[in-house]
Image (cartoon, rainbow, N blue to C red):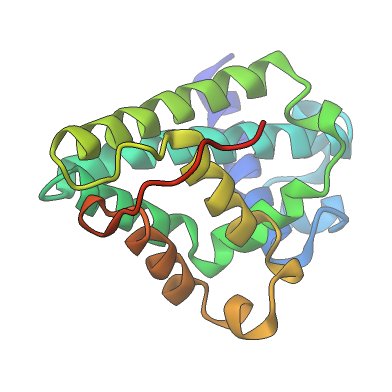
Length: 195
């Protein structure tokens, strides 16, 4: 793909992610093109239909998450601090709106695709490395893994409408409380999870 075509594609995906976070996945394609600063024809040359564009947004979202784990890790004092900062970043209102919009998509648009699965695996591995470091540093309880962290984060970021109103109104506070339960110094041994 030529450099200018790649730039246009990236502009479209980033604009689409913003506007989908604001208005949901049914936003008119013309508004996405306008926000990206491209013509509707350019948008449809890159993405022949809405499903193709939403799929690209899902890939972009997960790759952004993976990249942010690295950025925050480099800027943080230790792994536990990085986990807290990443969770707070992931729970910012615009990202929560995008995550909840993507969560209602059919499986074949996201998790059923090899590209998405690969991007998610990359993100999980990077976040998992952070969890293992926090555990090795003695900050995070050893009986909590990356999947538990992701499941709890998903409850807050992908399904905020299912939360009680006071929780949905202050996700950051409740996520901090959730993280406090993952600290090594406050851990009470838990029974084996049921699978």
